[in-house]
Image (cartoon, rainbow, N blue to C red; front, top):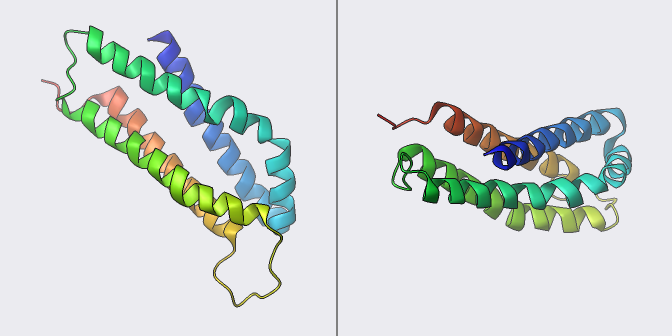
Length: 145
């Protein structure tokens, strides 16, 4: 349980911190400021964005499998797994595509689709909302009774 909670703190807290930092950088200086911030926070992607979710999901599944009071059929568990699954699908599809666009040089034609920075920040807001929803489910465990 301790590893699960600490990994969740790292995942949600780290993600929220990165998201707020990106938004402030964008307001301060647009794409160049966000690129500089993302470069400075690259370690967080490596050390938070990959291991923390794996630890959260792995220890969560292990706890459900070994705790008689919890079952995978309980509302709060399957809703949490669905939200984490949606998070991962969005991050690996839309997020990966936006990240590739961020890696390419900025386009001078402003008539093209919305800035990848704006879209990246909007996606981050959705992902943080999903994680906050999972935390809500973990704390209040709806459907137990």
